[in-house]
Length: 63
Image (cartoon, rainbow, N blue to C red; front, side, top):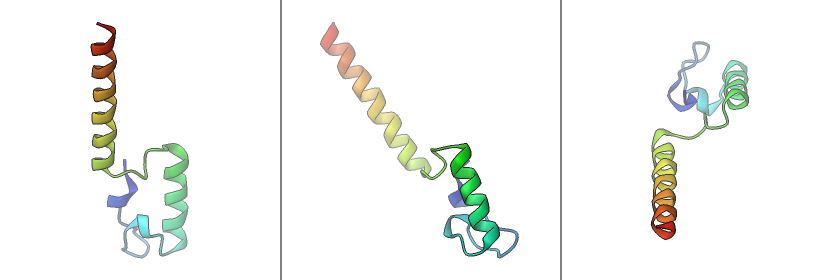
């Protein structure tokens, strides 16, 4: 789960902004649990597309 869409119950602001101590603590916890948590979904899709293109290029060169 990405934390850019989470809303803090303590201050009602996005957790990614880290306005209060609860936001900052949850943001740190999510970053430690999943290193890709800070990436937005479009960045993940772009990384996946690059990986698929690299695999296709590698398969084309070996064939």
